[in-house]
Length: 57
Image (cartoon, rainbow, N blue to C red; front, side):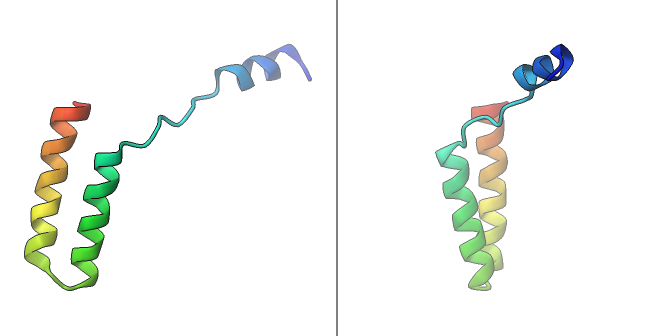
């Protein structure tokens, strides 16, 4: 392995850990979509936006 290949492996981006709140909101959104509850799905979309701005913004 060349030095440049070694360097590339060391500096490759790493996926950040998943946010549990994001996962909960996504699960609730997909559940609403599966159940055909558009009003709840829209609400969960808005909730994700608020969460993203406050927690990850």
